[in-house]
Image (cartoon, rainbow, N blue to C red; front, side):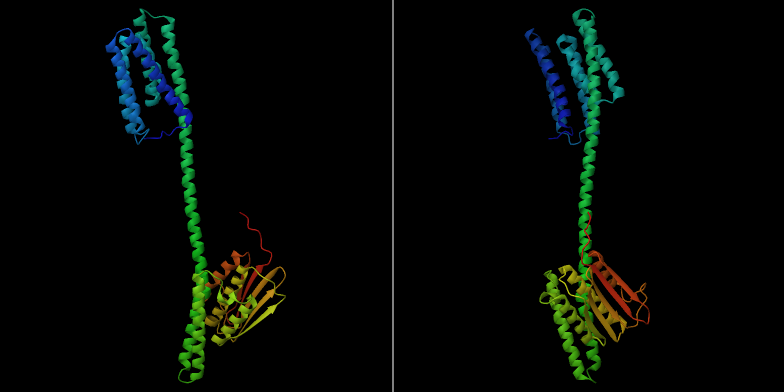
Length: 397
């Protein structure tokens, strides 16, 4: 069954008009039946049945207000009008059914067609009443005329209210649609952010570990026949790196902290990865701490560790440096991680490799309200500095 797209006030007005027609029709049928005119009473009952059938069909139509609804409604209105005309000619009691018919005309017909229709209905009602009473009188003329004027004014108010209701409905539909689009956009943004986070984690952990393993195995292959002891040492280092990478992968899946931070402090973890980088590459890596260490948020620890891993990975793969230094500085209002090497350097506008590592470092820094500075000149080494504020700025929403 159709739920009419009207607010309660308009629905009440609609049913008040239908109720008026029903009450006037019942009164007329009872009167003519009391006057012993069964044929006219039966015709009146048939008119009421036709009226009710039309309302029932209307309520079940799936395209209320559409072209099919209007065509069927106008056919129904024509049938009701013809029935009313026949009854009004036979009994004065049915003349006053013209009043609710005025509303039906104004509802189902465009105004340019409804107004002439009202004039014809009003004239017929006046003429029919005058014919039954034996002549026109002020009451016979004024009654239908005032009814037509009142019906027209109420119908115009009705149409205005209906138009406003439709505008509100469309606005609500637009708001609901916009909200759904925002939800989808937020979900897509969250998915992209999570994808970026996973890409950073994979790049700074698994990808770096696999690169180290490849370098160690290559070195072992070179030393296998000439320096078998060195080759075995490289293989042991590769095995250790593979074991650490496996732990990283498992904890990554479980979304736990990195193994380097699980059972030790940030300082110890940075010292350990510096020693590991020195053992896996020809570069001598030195780690230093400046200032008094303070406890940092876990996301700070993770960001500092990952940037150090990424920077040292770049040193081993691209710089060809003889020396590198990792410095963690506690400055009171900020913590700074510096990774400096004396390698071949590069043009910061065209970084070696894919450039994703530096972008991931910058995204980590930006997510925590910090910054990443990269200074490098071809032939003069590279310096990477990550700065994170110890007093975080409040995020405005």
